[in-house]
Amino acid sequence: MSLPIDPTALDGDDVGEMEATLEMDHETAIEHVREAFVDAGFGVPVEFSPAEMLNEKVDADRDPYYVLGACNPEVADRALDASDGRIGALFPCNVVVWEEQPGRQKVYHVSIMRGARLLGLAPDDEEWDDIVADTGEYVDEAWSNLDTA
Image 1 (spheres, rainbow, N blue to C red):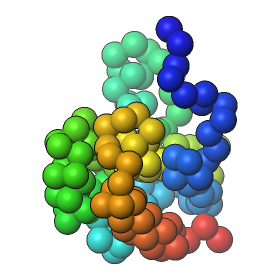
Image 2: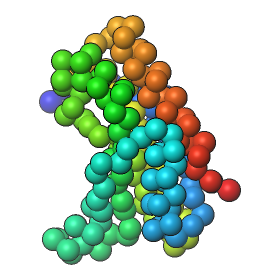
Image 3: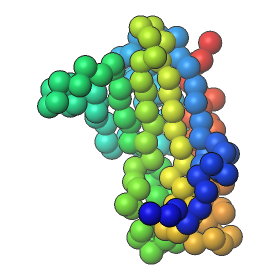
């Protein structure tokens, strides 16, 4: 199968990629990230640990790995309308926390709003530009709430 875009031509800015490192234990990092996003205007309606599930179901022996599904309701509502409902297939906006080593956690996020445009699930117009900008501001605020010192 040939891809319609060259993924190697994309960089982190194209997909709104963000990374941070937290010097704290895994459970504390999850709480900290959740609070940072809630304080920035997100809800967190979905949370789960793929590591726990995989370790239980297929004896994967995975290190701690956790997904927080964050959502800003106002922007999500606009995005559903602007994308004729297709953006919902990518909801919620996931923020991942994984343990790089004990006491050191990686926090990772990519913008589903930017990704949706690249996938053809969202329009390439000014309204979507505004949605991407607004979600970017919320995520930037959440990121600034992370204590990465």
